[in-house]
Length: 510
Image 1: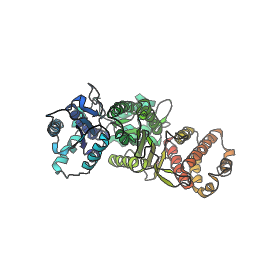
Image 2: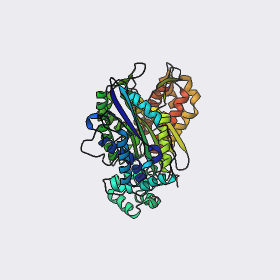
Image 3: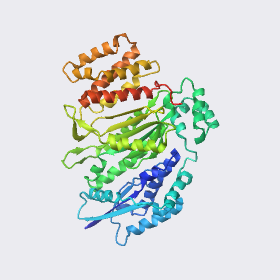
Image 4: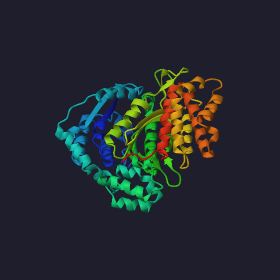
C-alpha cells in the first residue's frame, strides 16, 4: 500500500478582506504563497505531485503557489506534523505574526494505485476547510499590523518602489500617452491621501484625453473551469504535466497583466487575482475585455486546455477560464470590490446555465464565462454575464467576438445620445422583438426594426457601423439564450458597459 498526503493552508479569504490598499492586498495574498513555498521546500522533490517547482527561483513578485500541495510518502521517519509545526513557527517569526493564525491541515490516505487519489484527498481537505476556529484578537491584530505596516511588502517585494494607489492604477493609460506630463502630476500628488488631488490635476492636464474610466479600476477574479475534476480523474504523471503548464500559465498571465498596466496579486494554479485599469494603451486603446482575451490566449498557448478529463457520466471535460470583474470608482472600498468580484465569479459566472430550445435553464453549466458589475460612483449599477463559448460548440467564441466588435465600433465621433437610445429602445421593445426573434424571417424583421425604430437609413457611416455591430451581437446573443427577455437584459448591460468603457458616459461622480 502506498501513502499519499495533501496539505491545505489558510485562512486566505479572511486575510484578504483586511486589505484597504493595493499594497496590503498583495501582502495578504503573498503571505500564503510564501508559506506554501516554504512547506514545499521541506518535502523531497521526487515525492511531490503538485504544485510544480520553479527550480532555483523563488516565487518572485507575484504569488504563484496555490493553497494546496499533494505528495507521496517521502519515506520512513518523515513526520508531516513536525514539518508543519516547524515551518509555521519559523515563518511566523520571520514576518512577525502569531503562528496560531495559520490554519494548516494535512490528510493522508493509503491506496494500491493512484486512481482517484487527488479526488479523495480533495474531498477530505474540503471537509477540513469547513472548520472555522475563532482566534484571539491579539492574533488577528498581529497579522493586520504586519499587512498594513508594510512589513511583508518591504521584506519580499523586489521592485523597491511604492505600489500605486487605486487612482494611479485607474489613470495608468495617461502615463502611456504622456509619461513626463503624468509623472509631473504624480510627483506633486503622490500617495493615498492625495488621490483626489491627482485625479483633478490629471483632468486639467489632459482635458482632451481624460475620460470617466480613468477614475475606475477593475478587480478581477479568474478561475479554471473543470480543473479540479480533471485533476481528480487523470493519472499522477498527467497531473504533474498539468501542474507544470499551470505554472507557466501563471507566469505568462502576469506578464500580460503587467503589459496592460495592471497589478497582479496572485496567480497560483488555475486561479488569478489582479487589479487593472478599465482602459490601457498609447496608440490604440485596449479594454479590460481585451486583457481577458489575452489571458485566454495565454491559457491556450501554455497548452493547459489540451489536458482533458472525464466527469461522472463519462463526458469529456475541457479546461477553460471564467472571470468575475467588478468595475468600481477609485474611492469605492477595496475590500467590497474584492468581495463583489469573488461573488461574480463563483456565484454568477460559474453558475451560468445552458438554455434549451425554449430558453429554459438546463442542468448543464456553460462555464468559460464572464460576469461583471459596473458600479458607478453615483450609485448606478449595471450587471451582466455571458459565456465566451464552448470548445465543443460550432458557435464557439462568436458571442465574445461580437461583443469585442461592438466595443471597437464605438469611437470619439460616436454620438453618445445614439448609444444610449439604442440600449433603451431595445429594452423598451422587448415584446415586439419577441414576436419575430427565433422565427424563419428573423433577419428580415430585425433589419426593419433597426430601420423604423432606430432610423438606420438616416445615420452617418460610423453610426451605421455601430448599429450593425449591435445587430450582430443581438442575433448571436439570442441564438445563445433562446429567450428574448434574457437577451434584452444582457444586451442592455453590454451596451451600457461598452458606452462607459469608451468614455461616452458623463462624469457625474464628483
